[in-house]
Length: 386
Image (cartoon, rainbow, N blue to C red; front, side, top):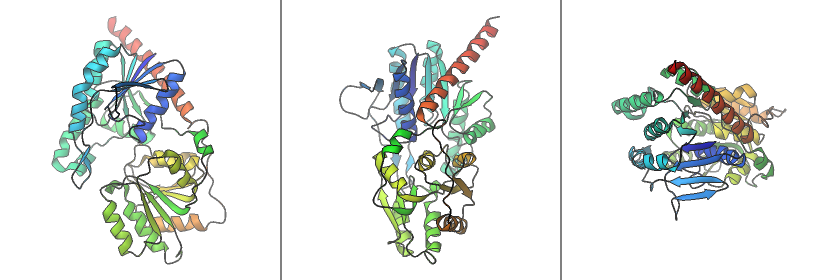
């Protein structure tokens, strides 16, 4: 089968949850005999088309700056730039059996859908988040444009993929009709086993982009409350973002410089896993998560997860398998739960996620989803020709 994945960023030249997902699935599909291509921005030197571990990577154009101003919001121009250059390379390479385009940043979905229609390829849109009316909160009245474009994207195909039950529910609320497949993210169990814990241990760890939706300030406030009864409590915050300086000032003003350390952005995945393994609890107070890759990695490392009980937070979906607790988004609620977990005499029960959550299993699920959608597509085509 000839398969194309479309996203603006390409792993390993940019490391993030979506990039990681595409890469892990792609290299396994390639190892299984499929012809796999990834289209995105050219973030490397040398020729635009390269081969890595059997996967064809196509850089269709050079990247532009992604974020602007102190808000750290993404600009629309890189998506426009990629969409403009994407059509011809995607059309000329070959006829793909499947084109899987990631929903965000929306605009590349349009040339991908057009090529799919011209080549009669199965066109999938994989949704990592659904924003809906959150666009208005994010951009004010200008967010109505985002709402409009998101609704256009959901109408480009009948075949949608969600990475979590929460994301699927939001898609259905957006007006997408079944079938909507759920193909979650995964974790490399073998890699996790090989990594040794970091010598820099901590009681709490938070790994997140430092933006308002991650609510790292709630964690800082909870640590301030806990310091009164646990003076030596240690917390590690991994990540960068527009909120970084404000959060650091809050730590200093609260007298928590010896309790909370910021590592900045950590690129090495092994180092991330090592930091997780050296922690007692992973705290993720986010209210906007389409899946929560960090939470799954924490569970794979044997570390429980505490998160926010919020409808936009898909980390809560992992509570079904155990090891994840969700509490109201207040400093006091987080402090109470953190104290209970840290002072408990019995270690928290962490589920064995090997099997269903391994990337091998996820890749197999992706293939079965494609086979099912292809069957439905053929049945619909046959009915239409009658």
